[in-house]
Length: 101
Image: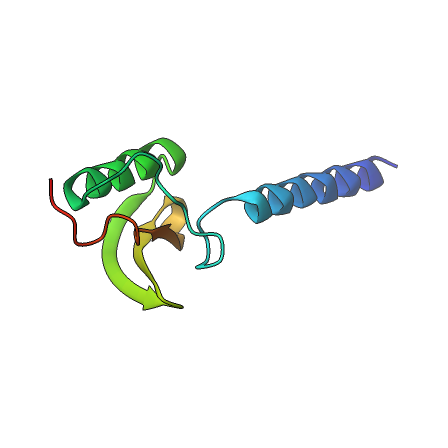
């Protein structure tokens, strides 16, 4: 019985983690993060750092790539995290790309 309860708890925890990961924004072009209120590149890059600092605590920027996809412009930020994990966060920067203050 105890083994069954532990197995059930592990499955529930895993399904909760999967649901949380599935709802995380910015993991693809289709679900890219749009930073409201940003009007130029200087503010935009700062806002990207602020966003990742708040939403990706414990993760470190490794690389930033400018990508054009489907007529839009994106910053794709590669992050490294706990235990050597890696992931990419997508920001849609179309509205402020190439604009200076």
